[in-house]
Amino acid sequence: MLSEIIGPLTQSLGPNYEIVLHDYRIPDRSVIAVAGKVTARRVGSAMSEIGLAIMAEGDTARDRLNYLARAPNGRIINSSTIVLRDDRHKIFGALCINTDVTAFRQAAAVLDALSGNTADPKPTTFTNDIRDVIDATLHEVLSGRGTMPLSREDRLEVIRALNARGIFHIKRAMGRVAAALGVSRATAYGCLQMARSGKAALGATPGDGGKRRPGASR
Image (cartoon, rainbow, N blue to C red; front, side, top):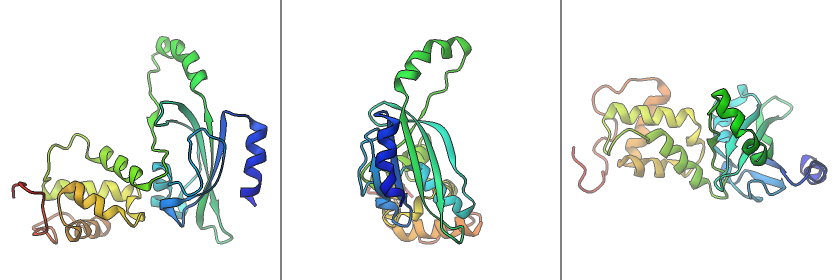
């Protein structure tokens, strides 16, 4: 089994490597085996935004190879996520290989600046708690949208963006999304149904009379 070989494989690669085995059927604690300490995750840790994106794509998802990410501690990581499929070609998990390349990036910083390559690795939420991933995804989607409450159209656009990122595969996500938007869970569910059906936000959004944040205007 893969869980039995990742330890020896990581030892052969060296201390800057980490291998993580995910079972996406349990997304809020998808890590079922880990060897190495690059991201400090452990068995029972949550998936990252990459895992959510793969779940959103479903069985058409492809491997993500050699992408750069930034860990919460500031370390720069080169990662590859290899999707795992069952005998019916259904995706059920992933094998992730993470390499700490901080020292290499620091050494290349001057050359990058001279060549005009100033791209910064995208921050990625490597965490033991799926709520951190939900909140990071919410922050990314809501960033720059102004204060709450959003208009019905903007709210539906946010729900569409969150759905495209796979956030609603997490059972506890809807409550946090509703709280962030300042609406009831019923309103958030109504927006999700509209987003998935492709309907435009015409007229009142289902559940628009739901609970709002104290002091919010209508």
